[in-house]
Image 1: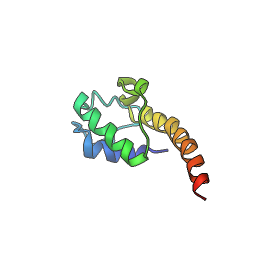
Image 2: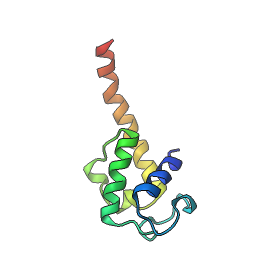
Image 3: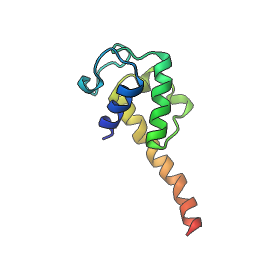
Length: 93
């Protein structure tokens, strides 16, 4: 669902050893060169792009291990963000 945007962010912030566009959704990002520092950069870029905040329990290799795992994490966070935003928007109208 969000894999194209995730690939673009990985290409810009992941400092990968391979072309992010050539990775499969299940490729191991750490084998592709993702480091702990680049993981933080990718996380911040994803949070800004998707307007989400990764929860503490998501901050690990499992979440950042593949494009599919990142996509699933973002999908989990998006509904939470939207449900929080909706009451605020209703108050403003």
